[in-house]
Length: 164
Image 1: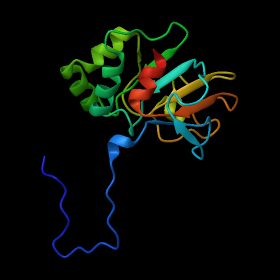
Image 2: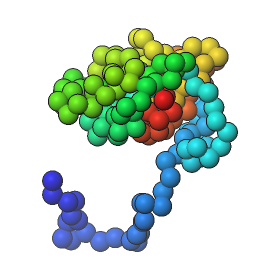
Image 3: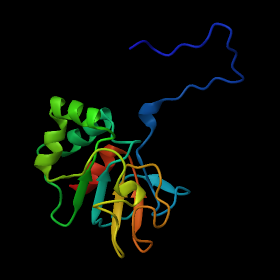
Image 4: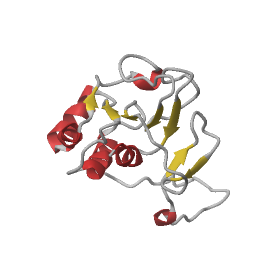
């Protein structure tokens, strides 16, 4: 891939230099995007469900990151980890790379590619009293199922690590 380059006539109001190696993965507060904390920094929360789904964070690279976290591990017995690639093409790519099988071997439950639990549809939605963690981009109260469930958001790697 070619690196991104600015147009020759582009000007910038300000330039920033970021050391991305100093950033920690974050987990949002349940059912809100307004609060977040570094993964593992606060109290440990027992989860019931984890989702590596959606058009947003279930691309081949996301599935690869989750597979790295779960390689040689199993999903905790009390957790249901749902996986759904963003498309059938992405799922096929993850299958060819072997990443999909790593997740299945760890105990992930396969859902059809595309929309589903992240929009409150189909199998694997949050139920009353449950706590979950998802790699989706929204966790408004009731979006992923019951309004009496709590859903935290995190990266695919953090979701996978949380499920183990």
